[in-house]
Length: 635
Image (cartoon, rainbow, N blue to C red; front, top):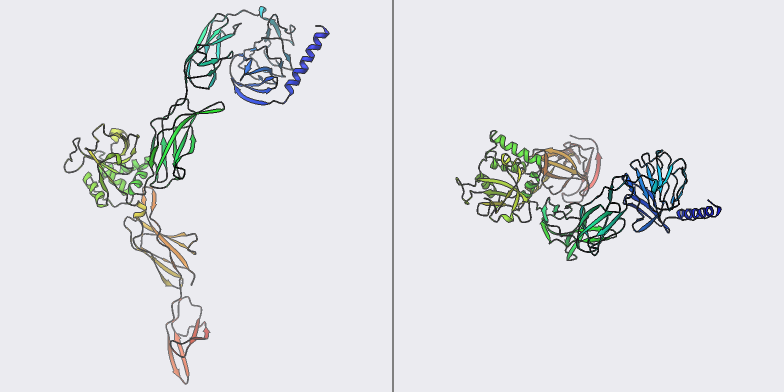
C-alpha cells in the first residue's frame, strides 16, 4: 500500500474519530434490540440486548444511518454465531466483540472499517472475517484471524425464511418491525426484498419496518434474494379504538364503588371520568391499565356517574376511543341492610354463618335458608331467636322492624332480603319457598344477581349467582324486603342521656339506661371538653363509679354501647358529653353551747377535708365574714 493511500486512510480515521468523539445529540434505547447514540454523522450502536444467533445489523435504525459500532457494544454476547455488518459502518470501537465465544463469522458489506484495539479478544480462533471481492479488505491473516473474500467463503444456499409475526392488528399511524429468519443460519446470501400488497394501506421499508397508513387489510411479504423463498404477515389496520363494552358499576361500601368494563384490543390503558356538578361535566379522575377502577372517599348514600374510554399510545401521540355512556351507581346508605351486605361480603363470615345454621339444624344442611338468614341478622346484634326455621318467620321479624315489602326486583339494593314462591307465584304452606340475602347485581342489565343463602350443595358456595327473568325467579315468583333504617351502630345508640352524680370528694357516678341489642358499654373520660378522651371502663352494668379523682377538678364523660359481629366489635354512637367535678359535702354544723356571751360551734367531719372556715353574720340572710380557720374537727 503506497504512502498516498495510507495518508488518505489515516485522514479518514481522524475524521471518523472526530465524528464519533462528538457529544451525542440524542440517546435512544431498544430499537430492534439495539441501543444507540446519534451524532450529526449518523448512529453509533452502543449495545445489543437481543438473543439472535445470526444477526444482520441494519443499515438504518429509526430512519438514521448506522455509521459506527461503539466500544464494548457486543461484548459478552455468547449467543452470536454470525454477524453481517452494513457498508455504512466505517468504525468499530475497542472491545466491540470481545468475549463473543461462539462468534464464527463476520461479513462486511462494504470496505473494511477502521477497527480499534482488542475488538475480537477472546473470540474463537476459527472466527473468519469476510468481505466482498471488489471492496477493500484486511490482510490475511489479520491479527491472527482468517480473512476471506466472498468468493472464497463456502457457498451455502438459502432453503427458507420465516417471520416472527404472521398476523397482527395495527392502528393508523402505528409502526412495527418484522424480524425475518433465513434458513439455514449459515446461508451465504441473506438479503431480503420486502413488498406490501397495498402500499396505500401499509408501507414497508428495506429493513422490515411497517407503517400503518389507513384502515384496511394488507399482506407484507419478505422474499429472499437467494432462491426467492417467501414469508408473509397479514395485517388488519383500524382507524380507532372501540368503545369499552359491558361497563358496570357496583357499590362496595358507604364511600366506595367499583367501575368495570371489558378489555379493548390494542388499548394501552383506560381513562375514567366522573361527573362533577361544579363543572356540569365529566372530569378525569384516574388512568389505569386494568379493566376496573375502585373509587373511594365518596359521600354516603350518594349517586355518582362515570364514563370510560380506551386509549392507545403511538410514538409521540395518543389515540382515544369514544366514551362509554354514563354509568351510574349509588354508594351504600348506612342502613341495617348495608351493614348486613358488608358483613356477608367476607368469605369467612359467610362460611361461619352457614356452619352455625347447620349446627342449629342439628347437622342437617338442607332446608336451612331461614336459619342462615336469621343467623346473619344475629351477627349484627339483632334479637332474632334461634328457633326461627321458616321463611314466614323471617318475614314477620322484618315487618315488625319496619322493613317494606317490594315486588320490582330491579330495585333491590345490597343487603335486601329476597323471598321466592313456587314457579307460579304461589305461597306453599302459607309461606314462601326460599329466602336469601341479595348481594348486588352481577351485570348492568340486572338479569344476574349475586345472593347468599344455604345452597352450598347446589352451587358449592354460600355466595353464588342466580338468573332472573329467564328462570323461575321473576317479579311474579319473587319479592323482597328493604329498609332504610339506621345501621346497627345507630340501633346501639343509648336510649337516654347520660347522668353524672357526685359520690364523694374524689368520686363521681356516671349512669344511663339499658340499650336493646347492647352486649355492654364503654366509658370514656377527658379533662377537657374538646380534649382527647380515654377509655376508662368496660362494663355490662348501666352505671360506673369513677374514683381517685381530684376534688374540685372538672371531668368530662361520654358512653357508648357495643356488641359483636363474629370476631369483630361494633359500636353505637357516643352519648352527649357530660361534665362534673367531685366536691366536698357541706358540714353538718350546730351550736353546742351559748352562755356568758360566748357561742360554741360543732360540726361533723367531712371526708377529704383538710380544714374548715367559720363565717359569721348578724342575720341569716346578711353578709358573712370569715372569723376563723381551723384544721381541727371539733366533734
